[in-house]
Length: 412
Image 1 (tube, rainbow, N blue to C red):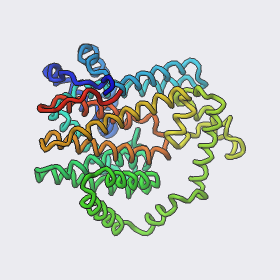
Image 2 (spheres, helix red, strand yellow; image 1 turned 135 degrees about the vertical axis):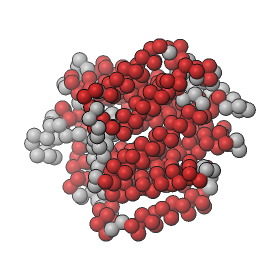
Image 3 (cartoon, rainbow, N blue to C red; image 1 turned 180 degrees about the horizontal axis):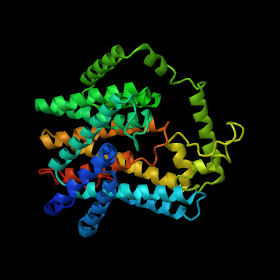
Image 4 (tube, rainbow, N blue to C red; image 1 turned 30 degrees about the horizontal axis):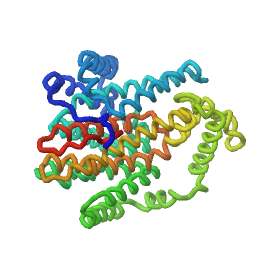
């Protein structure tokens, strides 16, 4: 096996002095995804900024623990951060370039905190309960507001459905292994509410992501007949409960003559032309600033500010060849870690069963994310970056479990 970077270390040694840090990490996630500051009169207090400073303080005061938790994924994200910073003084729109860097730096605070603080199976379970609970909140909010979310990462129907598609696999696989009746009810209700929110969103990209996610759920599951039955049950129920308008809307998914689909394809063409002229990238958040130079006669004049409407066609022209390589390596390391855990966690021990369920859900989550993200400009959204940190934390928790035949590497 090749040298390890996500290597087993004594995470328990840091557990006593990370309890408060772990709590603040969960609170940060609640404010980042749940956004109570948008509903309660506390926005003037800048709670997100305060929580960011708290995480920064914990990272600075526990530097030994941070350096002991290095991984290939964090290395790639640091490189991407450095690349975004380099672009700032040279970008056409310096403000947007800096904004892209600042957002990514904020995500890194959470990523590091998760990797360091989630150092036991109990904390991993707590993290996912909070993670899924936040999805339930977003889904309920969406159902009560015609498919849209509260803003920020959930500004419209496409944003909401993409996020939910990433979380649904965890509801599904944790439901299958849960023994407690209340736990089963929680995961089952989360699964149903999430699917309802995706349907209500009327998002075609969300529908594609949902279908791809469930296909991967079936492909990676070892209990294919049972999974096929459950998916068929969910799909049949959704079909019976949806009206003809929804079915008609989803039937146009592959229709490239539709004006929205046609405009998206034209935007992708402009993004590719932009990349060919700027193979090293135009800088973070700068596709809209350059779009007018590449729209040609495909669009009406004055279309500056249009987004690429795709994660990939945001990445390609904005971060160029270097950014593409770094991002694909990050994805590769995630996949290698997932496959590693999936291979070695085949034990009857409850903790191993939980880890194995997560490894299977990670695969479906990434599939749902990228299927939906292909049609939405979400490169700078935190979902994939956060999930990368959680994948690293899961591998490290695996190494803390007793009676494990340690394997020397999970990613190279």
